[in-house]
Length: 357
Ligand code: DAH
Image (tube, rainbow, N blue to C red):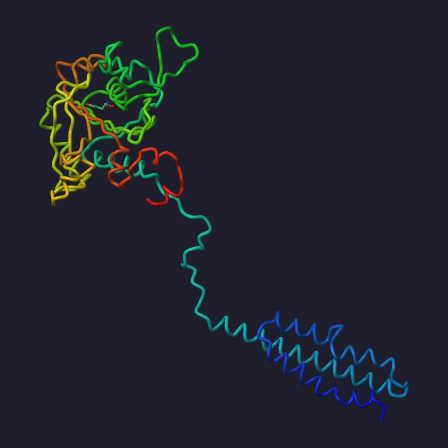
């Protein structure tokens, strides 16, 4: 018996080895890789087929048949395992818990949210809405007249210096008519009063601009303005409305106090303080409270009874009507609320800061 002939007799172990390796494959991918290895160019059976060339001619036919039969068996073993795996996969799919169509989608982009200043602005506007005020808007570029003159600032009033403004060139403007980035939202008061009939209860909010830039001042910041005009309102009502606003914003324990102050468009004018949100009630921490400088009070807004001159500038009968007005800074409320130490952080738009809210 030649060496080649004895090898052909050893094809059974080759087939068995292939079968058991196929059995060990647990995925279709793995199985196909094994098949390529076993039946591929470097596989044992391929080597057998190649060696036929050297076999004596009388044995070649028989050996060829055996090798081909062995190959067919290995292929059949492969197909059988392939079906087994496909069946198992299908069974697993059918037996698995059903696909839940109500599951939320996979998050591919993080969800955004409102800027903390926008959030606080709407919280404040909503409180006034719930007290019966309606919301109005005004432009950020306005006439000097609406920003200063109609509010009772004389042209050379120190406040026009104090609120050092950003002036805007208006092409083709009539001589003497000037425009600026509004320095406060009180512009909305005169705009609303000159276009609508009392009774009025209006709030507005938005950006205002002044040439200021430090830890507590930004050249752009946000105010809320409100006013009420009718035939019978008075300072007691102002105190009632603003006290209720403070309790809704800071909680029922919040108290308010009013200190006389001066603004050209109100008489009398006042500033309202609220009890310090950090050290009230005083648990001994007040003496070292840096937010209220140990006073127990935080200044939150300016207010007063609308000056009759302002009514006259807006075409409202100053004998018949009276009103109160108030203005407050939104950014400061947000800074106190979230413990933000530097106003400029609010406007740098750094996601590392903004995602903390
Ligand atoms: N406009 C004032 C400011 O920017 C704030 C203010 C004070 C508004 C008194 C008012 C008010 O309506 O009555 O400083």
